Length: 461
Ligand code: ARG
Image 1 (cartoon, rainbow, N blue to C red):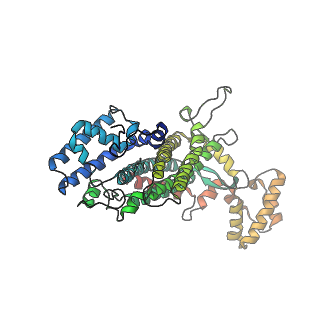
Image 2 (image 1 turned 135 degrees about the vertical axis):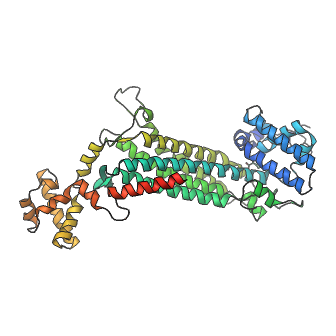
Image 3 (image 1 turned 90 degrees about the vertical axis):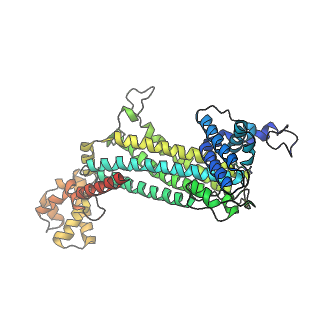
């Protein structure tokens, strides 16, 4: 046989370039465990349905376990001439158990096999990412509880706006990550259906039991349309979309860490564990891990885009184009996992500098809104007028080069004669955050309650 795979129909071997562009074993070897699990389920089903003998199926299952052991131990040399993981496994199985191996591919195709493998793989990957996301949420919720009353400036337009608490800021990310987990869970729910038994595209004349294989592989049900089963890759796209959004969230926190670590901000400190030095500037401590997490959306959004472009306009059912889903997806999800681990490490490592944060929180007339609110509450001014009066007071303070609390009562009364000394109480950053007890607000009491609620939820798993 001069052609290793298609000896019957093909007389000659493929061109070297044909082999190189066609082969996927370089990357789909990663699906070995899923591929073998699918084959074992298929073998058991073939026997139960009387399509192969019980003894052949037992041999197949025994042999498949051996192949998996060899692969796990790194003892199986994969062959590119055998194209992919499916043919590599089957070929090794034939070497180990002989003839029964040739019956394994009855009533199935590599098309339903690869779709099955990929669904199993993404299901595991999503479960792993979910655990990592929960760990990051926990790290952030713990920081939030510890810093429920640590005031810092809250920004809009990256201009100091109103004081918030560091804990409140951490909990904002806990919420985002919670939605990320929800998106992954949605994707997981939709992808957990079995394509196995769709065969090449049309189903099969053998009396197979697709419910049985679906159940054995932990799928909720078999997919209802064989053409859809082998050609759908929207499940990969959905996982990548969830990954892209999640990576974007991580990059926002990463950017804040980068900013906060600068000499200009000094809001937080990262230790030697999560920083690097410079080869030329001895004073430097660079937040490289945060910068890399900030950059990861590049390749992760890229993977989603690449897959959508591959799928766009692709006719039913299977086309080899779909093999291009794997490398970007593996790369994207590996990198998301790495980014999550690095971010969790940084959150544990990060020390907020409470004094710097407190000073910064007061800078930029951040309690001006509290002053306006006082005018509304105590003097009964309409908010629009209070806003105007406060604006004049800010301008007065700015002219003097000081803060609102440094204005004298007389100076204030020159702007609005009814202002009393009581106003000074609302001008501190602590009073400002403590007053924001509205649902979802930044008050330390709220933050403590929310952090505890999250920690309880996360501990329950
Ligand atoms: N390596 C292929 C893929 O990743 C597996 C399916 C091959 N099917 C085929 N008809 N050539 O999509």
